[in-house]
Length: 327
Image (cartoon, rainbow, N blue to C red):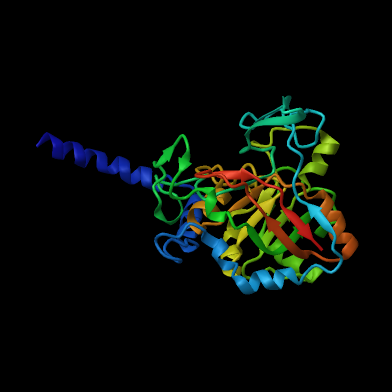
């Protein structure tokens, strides 16, 4: 009898606790379910929204370049604090490069040993679909607990061994508003993106790789280093609906895509969770978008061929990446 009494006495607590959810969290929860691609490409799918890139999309993307101008969207990987993509606040990223020499059969060889932890706020990298889970589940219902020291057998970065080749679209929001950069904490909305499309005559379409510039690195060159994990410009989580409606394949930014603070008390990185877990959409973080911003203005063109080639790791949650745009 006492157990029934205990259960009954706890019911008001659970009821009150369930109501103690922020309005933004309720909106987020509905959006998470609405944009979910679980099962869309079968219960064994591991590529998520990259499935939107079919053979015809690749062939059409190959026709985009007219000038043969190649632009890297990534930074050098470095420990040097004088470099723009180094942050004293980034405790996640670690990098070491040791070069050595070896004499073998009369030849003097030069060798390298690289050690890197790339997730964080510094290195240009791709987040694979095993990078984040919710409620013990990864994208498409894969078990998030199936991680070993060698990563994930079921949802590793090797799903993208063939590379990601498509049309890229640069959404340059500072340019839209006549600024060099957005103030830290700014949230880029769907309305901002639609305004950019209209003003610069560009259209986000099925299978596109969408690259959003906030001007983060220009801001850093002016103001110096800051704790990007606490205050940063990024996209508002509600743009997931636009990404879903347009059937975008990949989202990338010069930041980590999420704005900080996120605007949802219960969610620190809602954009990451909506894309990686619900939609199955890989992310590109910490891109160097200053060169492509200048080139796009010069060419008066904000769409281009893009090639994203993660390293061929087995079971990895992502990869350092050198994304290349060609005009």
